[in-house]
Structures are given as structure tokens and as C-alpha cells.
Length: 111
Length: 113
Image (cartoon, rainbow over all chains, first blue to last red; front, side, top):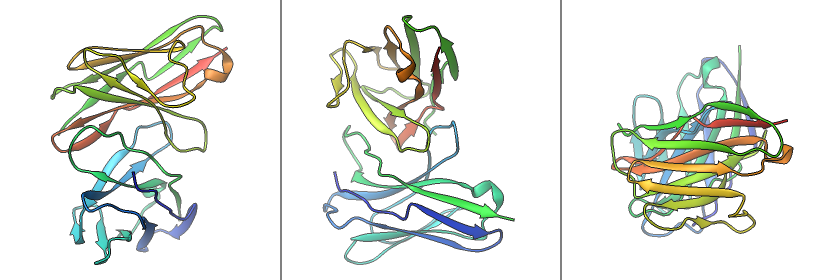
């Protein structure tokens, strides 16, 4: 499975847009890019998934350049409740290969 | 969407006793489930892959005799921490893959005293 690299931590004020970039230089052709959010003492929660270009849902956007060696999770107008750890994972979208987590990015939103 | 239910959400046990954690897929069948362990301020570490009707596959460094996994049905996998010790205190999380991707349980906080 492709290894991912993310910033260890980020701080942001409420109402700002937050962009978290993940590097995955060894991503395979079949790999999708998926982001999860984890609050303390809870299991990870799916945020968004993409393969290329841009994906947007009700909570976030995911930008993937043409070479797919990186991706950026964009959280618009963050609030205090967005304080969490965000994980970027790459892997196939079929089969039963387990997800392997990197260190994630600890986002702290400040009032 | 796919829901994975994990019980208990927290448990305190005495050193030397065994604890069983259940992971259920509520609205889908999961031939494979995954067990993770997470220490404070750290990421999730994959412990094992649970396969319905067959033996689990353990990651390197995880003692299979200590962490017993049973996947007897398509909707239930259990993790039993045998002869628990304080160093086994951790947050245990299960996961399964549904049609829409991987779903995680809410986790079990195990404290061994």
C-alpha cells in the first residue's frame, strides 16, 4: 500500500478555509484516495474519496492533480467542532485489503 | 449507509482476566473485518484481519495467542484479549468493508488495572 505523508499538525481560526495536503508518491493506478476524520475516543469517519481531479460533497472538497502524487483536503469555513485528526489513505476500491493509517494531521480550530 | 457496531464502548478489567470485544456489521455482510489498536496521541495500528470461517491473519508483532479473533458469522467478529495486562490498555477499533467503502466501529476503550 502506498505510504502517505501529511503535516503533523495545523492550527486555524474559526471561519477560515483549511487545506491539508497529503503526499503519496507511490500511488498505484488502481488506488483511490480517501480521507477520514477522527475525534478522540471515536472510530474514524469517512469524509471524502476521489480518484482524480476534484470531488466535492457537503462537508469537504478533494483536489487531486493530474499526476495523483498528492491530494489536498479542503474544509470550508471550519468551526470548533472540526478539531480532529484527519487521515489520508490510498488503496484499492475493491477487495478486502485493510486500510493502513499514517500519522494523520491534528487540526486545531481556535475561536 | 453501512454501519459497524462495536461493544462494549469501554471496559475496565483486572490484570490476568480476559475481555471480549464484539464487532457487528448491522446492515451488510462482511466476510472480512479488521482490528486496530490505538494508543494515546498515536495513529491506528492494524492488528489483524478477521476472515469468516477461517483463521485470522495477524500483523507482525501481534501475539495471536493473546489476541484471539473469532469470525463465526458474516456479521460478527470478536476479539478476546486473554490474560490482560496493563500494557494492553488501549483503544481497540474494528472495521469492515461495505458496498460504499470501509466503515469503522466506535471503538472500545480497554483499561486493565
